[in-house]
Image (cartoon, rainbow, N blue to C red; front, side, top):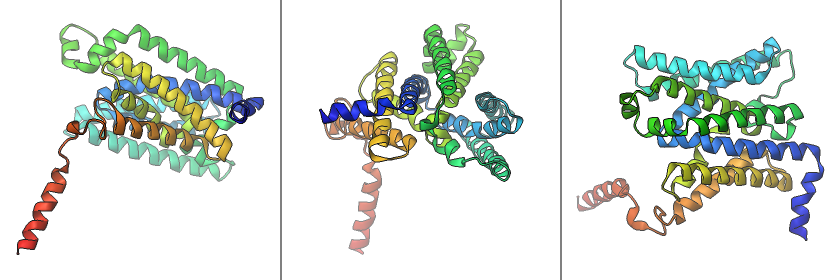
Length: 302
């Protein structure tokens, strides 16, 4: 009865009802979109876009327009800048992402700091989320973004699947790979915008990557990774919300701690890749330890 009471009690509050709905939606779309990022090994791109939305939020606040619009425009602009640096210079993509990430993020923090001089704004809400403060309008916007993202993924699943695993092959058969790449970037930007209230720009990468990475350790196919990742994302978001309510923890970090804990369990106990259940799959990174041992032996011999 105590457990049931503990699960039902938060639901009597309107702010918890709204927060749980947003948590479920965010956990769902982050896992679906993040699966593509993980398979393409573009986790840093998700981080770059998530941090790059901050100046868009600040400028939208200054212009008194919807913050989500400013965040989305800034996220798309960051991907354009990354592509421009990569194609117009010998700088590689990962370096371009790092440059754009740090530059946009610094600009966003500076703009918000200037705004704080005349307006009372808590910077932590943008950085780490404030899901308990979501309004009915936020729920509506998040739901609209979730429906749009899921609809695009369903409609373009085969094309995105082909492009994700074999971009050169997709180009060879005539698929519009540039449009698919831009569409994927737009999906990431939309997902980041939807997640701002929940976990903020600093922690959103965890929800984008970790559920998919956890599922990848447990199932072999992309659609299975998406489905299981979505379940993991939703369970983590709900569990984090309840933990934040019961133990008075910040909601965003609580959600991230849960999903990180689930990843750790999968890493240790996965039937195929588990460090403890299938030690034969463990890579000899212990190469580092072997070199240290050899060095130590040489020193002892001397």
